[in-house]
Length: 444
Image (cartoon, rainbow, N blue to C red; front, side, top):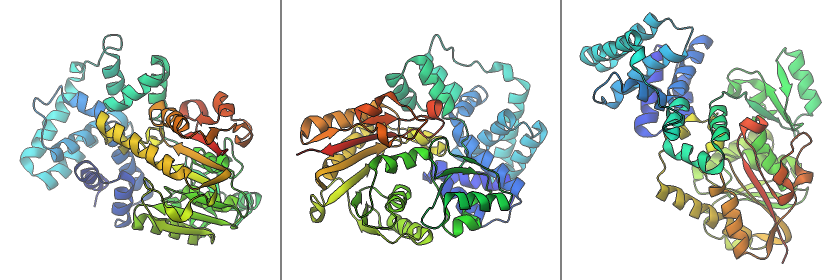
């Protein structure tokens, strides 16, 4: 099967069945023997169309009077993406190859329509009039950087216009893959020597010693990954466990644990001692944690199916540390998961999500021993899901207070609010994912 046909099948799953792009991509690529160059082309086309969908659809609206069916639209977006963003693909190839696949999948009539629209764009690009920044800032940001209204509104609610635009731009940049060295199995310096001996290019993390940016193609197939010497995890995500600061022998609860990045990092920091209890609502997601623990050689993690909006009576006041890394809108990780842009949250849905976040935080607080700590974190940006939730919690829980986390922040990372008990990272300012991390202590 040709790369463009595979890309179409993945996009159809993502856009019609709301499949996760990375899962669909890996599923389809596993069943195909593609050369590395074709694999790269497929990935660029799939994730590029998702990332730039709002821009592509805006441009196509100048050449299509009535929006066509989804399948036809996907081919139009694929063709236009190649013309606009894939410089190494000649225009004739972008159009002809896309139309040929469309002919095979959709038939001659719709393929001819796709051909006509793409060629009209090539002839009459000047017809496209982009929104004026001064007249309609929201529409300008939406179309220029390709974001849904709710994300544009969120950033404009939290930052001035200049910074909001810079953040939107930074969230479109493709990040390098960061790996956590599994120090339970290998020393950091020993891994570096192993990489050097194999001629694998890498660079140090921006902030954390156990973070390395390694140039590996198909990481999950690589021997280092299979042997559990490395784990894919962004430095911002690692900062959550660092802020929790678990000690050897602690009892730790991770109440929204799957797929287990922070769970396994916590276990690693505890040197496989004590106990980490990992909750998740879905049994199949807990299986991912078990698989990761087995690969990484972790033995101090216990998993349990549980809905963390409720209280698990078995663990009342049993934990030294609790992590509530709650479900969120995910704005901070769009660089890695551009399909987050496809979620059109309504205000009601966001309100319901924030209510669930608060319930999880409230329930999690019941597990903390007196003198113990509770970390609340999200992978999103904006006070709505972060500071506001914490402030509400503190008003209703006088037995908790925010604590200074400056000592837990690595050297080189200076965020002025760390002494107040919370930080917000962003790719714009810190070159890592956008995470909110706060730390509370039970004082009564």
